[in-house]
Length: 546
View 1 (cartoon, rainbow, N blue to C red):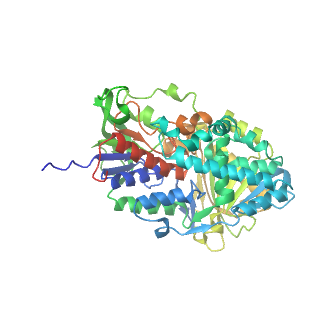
View 2 (cartoon, one colour):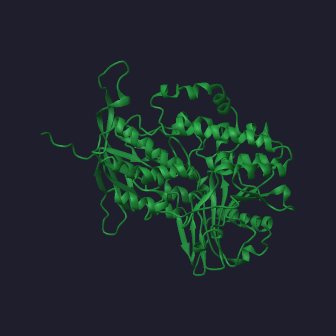
View 3 (cartoon, rainbow, N blue to C red):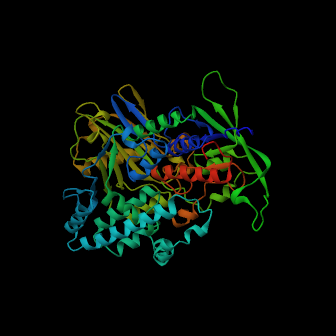
């Protein structure tokens, strides 16, 4: 009898959502998986911080596309309900418009009928247009899930299916038109245009640069609704960690990967076969493993892990320009025409007393979006008043603040300019202010929130404050240009035009996460894990589960 093949040795670089999800799925497929995370905690950009009885998520905060998250838990033999308590938000979010500050803020309640009624109240007669818009958004979302998200487009003929071919002219228009133009052609009220255009920010771009295909996002918040996992996204990270460890994954934190090790000359398989032949062609390199620097005391010597498969679930530019050896290293010029997406200034505030003026999610929209987004895209200083997102988690989850107090998380979209620097910490026992630009932007955001929401004494009530700037995202996540979310979803960086999950020069090297297909966001990162798993099944060494 022949011996069973040894389990493929796999190393995953990065312990964010994509890294955890990929490690778990490959372990389910029979791989012997080690996950390396350079920080001391898991979650990647989904960070967490606590002080003086307050806790904050410092990354994702919108729980959308729940069916995608549920799908990963199912693949891991579990369910979201076994690990998380989800609460549906009402309102889904509150909006403050600069030109309407003398009026009450606009609350958006999820659900088709409520959304139509809201649009009617803002502009009588526009409800029918929203009905049509939401129909289109739902169709685009369904088409994307079926044909564009769970794939790396390794077989373009897979797109030549009746459902796609029938809609080809419409898809071409949606890809060739900006979201901003698409919305403006259907709605005239500036508030409605902003409500339908703001999701582009969560795609790492602006309404003027995002393809109209992404109007599908309005289906998620206006029709499907917005939920919140009690304990925040940190609770989701912890749940995924439990499942991944149970699947047999070894997790090593405080492990800074210094190189991806390759061997010159390898034999490709699958999509790497030479066109028109059945034979395999020589490849320039074969992955051999990784080398990392342990963070634990007493272990200064780098550690090398051999591997048959390596998955880089971290910033793609860092992986390809800093970790690969020179023969396979991508030139910096490759990124010259790419868009890293915006950065941001983050502000965590612990506030004494209650803040009923705010909902769980809050959006503050300036009137002149052209100027707002233009400054970000050109790398210029922000205006004194700029569009801001504010999360008051304590509105839904009292455990995130001492009784009677509130926690706030403020996100100010900003240029991807690492020179803006890093943030600082101010608590009753610590006073370590951040760099000047970061603190100035944070101060302006707190002042703007106080004025727009009618909380005149907000600054005086802050007892804990922590800020983060573009420099922090470089230092903590090796983020390209301090990008907050990942490369923006412009046309040239969407769907099949986005970098793929398989390295073109190194056999056995794959990528997962927001830098590659399908893109930005927690659900997209979980989908990328499936795409990687399928690519490994197709071209890499197989485990017992395949």
